[in-house]
Image (tube, rainbow, N blue to C red; front, side):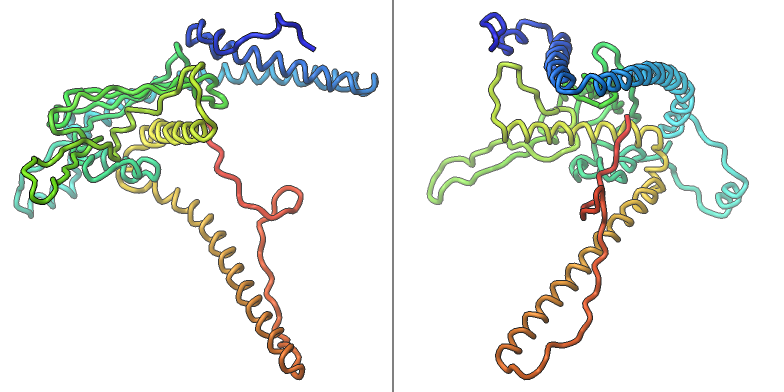
Length: 370
């Protein structure tokens, strides 16, 4: 039995704290609850076993110290190489946007001499648009209406943030007829970068020119026949890549939310984080490979392996279904005639994916490292 002083309203307590303190509070409460559970486990053990467990905990403690050191050194190494990458990204930016011209090869010079000269566009047109469309994650977000606006995208960058912990994506746009912003940002605030555990995401509010908003469409409803009323016009949200800058909103701690809404919100946040991670980890470092489509080949190879497994399983299932139907027909015929024995057709074996203790199951999803 706990005393009255142990009872408190968590919502009231967290609402009184700053946003950055809430994560620490929740971790502290979690650790306190886990400590109580651990003590219960240890008390149920015999003294000899308890001593062995304590020895194992000492080993684990040394492991954790090494792991913490590894993370520190990894962070330093990552920061070092991010600085080394920057000059390369700058050169890429200059070539893509026609600031720096690449010297033609002798073969290109010979070809130019034999052809009529035509006006060439500077840089690499639609570079980032094509890269985004060739990635399986971001391509699902880009609509036909978005494409003209994304042709004005000049560069995408990312950087780590310390307060709060996380990372920020920056999308640099040339002057365009769709919105006034020259830079659109998306920030991810992480509670734990190593898990990773996302607290919330924040995007730029886009300053659209009148009638140019790509995240909404105009719906006109015709008046009833014989009516002199004007058509009713209303705005409706629609799919667009630019919805990426308006991420799912996390409710306040004291705001009630049912289980279905919480699950839907979690799915939306995971999807949003997957898009941000794909841009940060795949598209930015390997943009030209996504532009040419070479990066797709490696991913298609992995997908083909998975699809082959699925096809094999589907074929086996169809084969079993056919055999079951034949067996049913044979049993029915036997029951009627009582003369002919059932067919001696041999059943084919089914290939199975075996996991763990030998049970059939699917392959686990790809582990995403941060």
